[in-house]
Every structure is written in structure tokens, then in C-alpha cells.
Image (cartoon, rainbow, N blue to C red; front, side, top):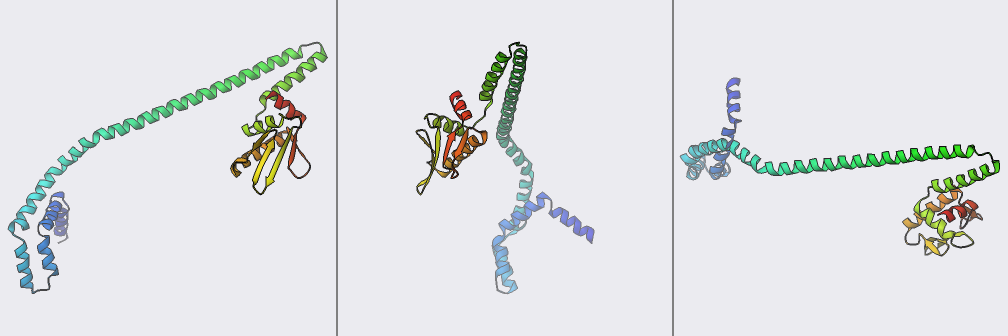
Length: 245
């Protein structure tokens, strides 16, 4: 008995019988609906069912439609593959081009990093050669003077400040007092250095310049005057760096 049930299930699950059953329901749905929902006597319900169905809708058409659909399924799949092949190729080519551009960009960045490293190494070698040349001088005073000047030049060259810190430093150095004022009022906060104001447009901008001011203080180019944190002045190193900038 189980073998019979399994055989029936396997037949029903095949594409052909599945399409035939769907076609049967499509052709006879009105009769099935009346048969299931009518409150009349069984004989009357069967008569309603027969009035809405026929031999063609019950057997011939479902089997024919199931056969046609099952036979055309693979052709339809092939047709859809032909239609979709071109856009799939275009998508694949686009992905390959994007990967190619990404690879080229990575190679360019690697070359830039390599060039920068080589430049830095050459600079260190040149510095070492210049230091050896200075060490060979017999005049000690001239030697010390050159070492001081070269050290100053290297310090000015190697200094790394943010753009905001450079703006504040050069603005403060534009006046003789070299002061930076931190102004906090009900209207907002801003900095005054020389004839320029910084950070008055928004809290985000002010926070950036406040960080730049802390950067200058930490580097020793600016020092606070008093204990309120409202007045700052350039140090000797700050004046020197501002002049170099």
C-alpha cells in the first residue's frame, strides 16, 4: 500500500501532472466553488457542478494544457536565458572594469608610497652626509654655528601643524603683541588673533580652532597668560616659526 501511495505522490509531483492539476482548477473553479459552498441537497449540488463543467474541462483540456506547458517549459527557460544573457554580460563586464580600475588605483597609491619612502631615505642620507661634512670642520665656533643654523632649518622644515594651527599662528604674528584672545559671550564663542576672528560661525568650527590652539600650546609655540584661559601669547619659538611660515 505504501508503494502505491509513494508512486502516486511521485506522479503528482512531476511537472506535467502539476500543470494539469492547475489547469483543472482554472477550468472548473466555478463548479468546485458551487459544490463546496452550496447549501442545497447533494443531488442539487452535483447538478450545479455538472452545469458548470463538462468532459472537456474535466479531462481533455487540463491534460492538453499540462502537456503543452510541460513541453514548453524548457523552451521558455532557454528563451529567458537568451534575453537575460546580454544584461548579465554587461553587468559582469562592469564589475570587471571596476575591479580593474581599483587594482590600477591601488598600484598607483603603492607607487606613491614607495616614492615617498625613497625620497625620505634619500633625505636622511643627505642629512648624514652634511653632518659628516660639518664634523670635519676644524673651526669649532664655525662648526657650532653651522650646527645651530642647520638644526633651526630642520626644525622649521620638520614641524607638522594643522592648517588651523598655522592660521592662528600667522594671524597672531601679524601684530606686535602676538596675542590670541578667546572670547566667550552669550552670543557664542570665537577667537581673535591679530585682525582675524576664528570659529565664530558654528560650534563645530570653534571646536576645530580650539583644538588647533591646544596643539600650539602643546608644541610650545603659544603660552597662556593668566589662569582664565582667555589670553595667549606667542613664545620665542612661535615667533620664529611664524616668521618661517
